[in-house]
Length: 230
Image 1 (spheres, rainbow, N blue to C red):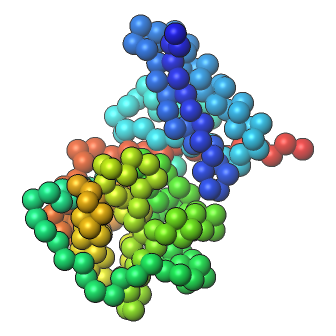
Image 2 (image 1 turned 30 degrees about the horizontal axis):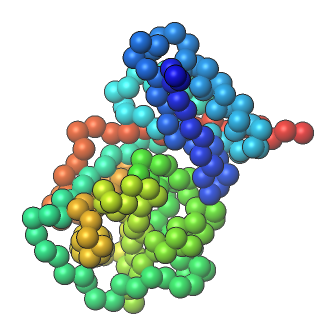
């Protein structure tokens, strides 16, 4: 029976994402986590991933320390806010449609990358902003916009039954969030979550106005840039 488990996923930009790291309580503090990290790093290097990343809570000193031991450093801090959609019925604002042209989607997404401080988040997965991520989001049908260029990136990387995630939005924020809630409810799903840099006071105010409840603490993404072989 395994004493621990780790999973490497390769994200659209080729980076290695630490999907899972679990160690049985009786084996914690006995080097199992370090062994999983070493194997994760080895696999990422063999796949020629340009970077490796993982996330943890701001208060999880042990998890951050283990990441730092393997050369990862802080790349960003984000907070989540969730709207429960079970207590009210929402109407979809008119005009939002899936963006069909990738070139247009790319322009919209590039316009928001700096406000998101170069990461977008879905299902606690941190995607580095850039061409590969934009194409992935667009190909998954997650980019919506209206005629006034208000746009919302919404979907789920996994566990869709729990709800959808807004990776980014731009333009009229309240209108975008109203669309996100109504669109999620139309899918028969119970909640929608937004993750963003906590110092962004505009997004915070818009979310609170629209009834989103913030998490009690933030999450951090840790990153190490890997050297290419040869």
